[in-house]
Length: 492
Image 1 (cartoon, rainbow, N blue to C red):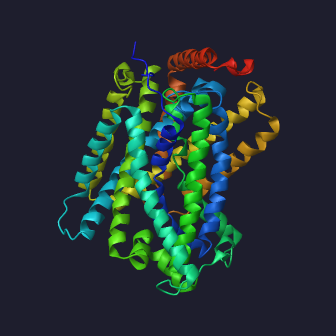
Image 2 (cartoon, one colour; image 1 turned 30 degrees about the horizontal axis):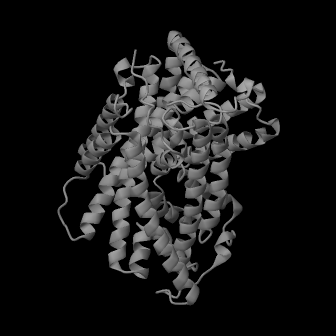
Image 3 (cartoon, rainbow, N blue to C red; image 1 turned 60 degrees about the vertical axis):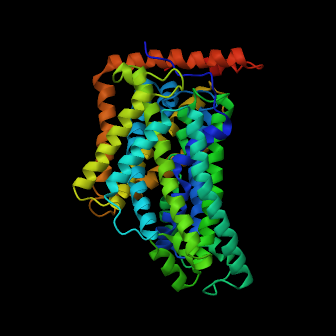
């Protein structure tokens, strides 16, 4: 019998929220994702991110509703298993594992990218191969995640907190100087960026795909359902909080970058062509010293995203192994910290090995980052669709007392996911034309396991029923108000 998760030290709301924020890597997203949008819609970048926030809200509704009833280390693996059935649960969980592993590879590559850039900014000309930085980062995240989960959460909070604080300082300076007419290029404070301007509505909707991808990984805290205090309350709050917090930051910083470069044609071109828009703006508005601060926060943010990806991937591996898919040793958790140490080591070793292979094949760190980020996003779109179907089935079953009038929300979310997947899968050039097939092959492997191993599906169904009903009974014993009777019935 594998060790059960360590539960004597429960995570608080902000600690669960930190895992989702860390996986999204908002500092990276704020610095990298605006330029491509500017090339598509001109100065309407903040409007695009505002609409992207609406899209992720529609998609996140399913996780928000389902985590009010179920909590489990397997995230969508359990959410879909409890609502649609164990086959759907395994399929969704396997797709999510592919997402987290791909995100771990891409964030390790990003750590190499930004570590190189930071050292170059300090004047070092010879910094070694990027894969060496990725390997060191992989070792670091594995060791840190092997400690108490609260330590991981606090590390994430500090790493991303430094980046967010630096972004806010830059925002105050840019808004102040553009508002008072003292901007270095005579840029002005311009609220027209929240209107389409010369961009067509079709171009704006297409650009929301780039914005939506900035939120990929918002559901990571759902994997902490067994380690968080009062998860039925705190996990939904952490999900909503991570989306809203990053949403406000994204819209604010896209506004700051757009007006900071300028809303005329010259400014838009500079924004669209900037390799690191925040570093460029920092140098212009505050000086070289602050651009070095921003460059350092990019390294910290990439490492934090890898830390969060490692934690989420390992918990998914542990949950699958606990229910019979894979060696039972991978399900064991450390008695002192509750961390799935063996699963952490496996995920770290696989990700570092892939990064090293990419380097040996001559792949640049930037290419490795974008390639695996794309594969991970394509897998996570499938995961989000499974969660959306799950909340629809759960609502129609009347087990959770969710008003049927709310069905329009997950239906709209599924429609938006189809649009995003189509945009990500068509009109691309090689090698991006291959990535939908790679993601499809991974998801098809999960489907094949479901179809060819019915005994595994039965074991998963029995185990999920036992675990989730056990969670409900635990809630009854520790809650002054018993949950609704319908929410106690779990029928895979």
